[in-house]
Length: 96
Image 1 (tube, rainbow, N blue to C red):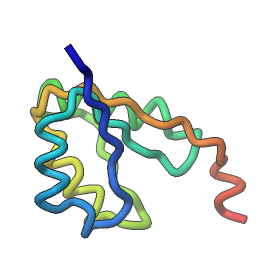
Image 2: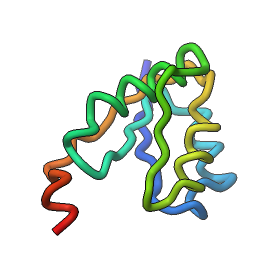
Image 3: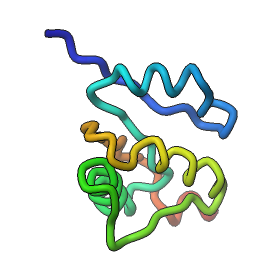
């Protein structure tokens, strides 16, 4: 059986009907994280959101909270496996 892997878009307008259709068909969603220090936290958070529908933590991108919220609504209770890209960029580098 083929496995479908789908990488998220980067902008709110990417979370459209096409995204929704592809997301419904995928087995694994690959999410992006801006800095490597947040990798474990975001992966845990998104997988809890997918599997049980909530998490004790919260995560919204400071750059684009509307996008983060909308993506999380797709993920919530989806039962999808969520993988997270481990960014090579550190928080210190991003601030410079």
